[in-house]
Length: 131
Image 1 (cartoon, rainbow, N blue to C red):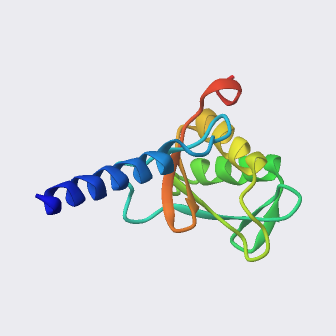
Image 2: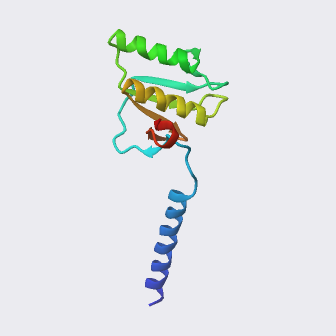
Image 3: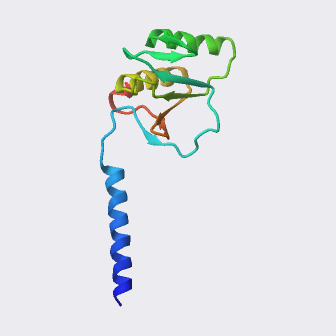
């Protein structure tokens, strides 16, 4: 009789811990829903750089430069349907990085993803970022 009670208590504790993980932190506007269908590969991989810039193929780009680089890819018919943003060696992914990428993705019609601690999530516009 004691064993079923222990198992029920352990199951309840596991459910409570998982609920804390799901509802514990808030995400900034424009971010992050867990991606159900994460692509096997990405057309473009960006790395977060200092001063809210992006490292794109070894070149630091501002948000305007990044948008121009993506526009060039579209004009040259290079693949641009999925973009992954990763943490830099010395730079975390900031809200500004996410907001910029969401804005450009919405404008240019590609899907944007972010890799945070090995978990890949899709970025989607919501709230202020959708405007």
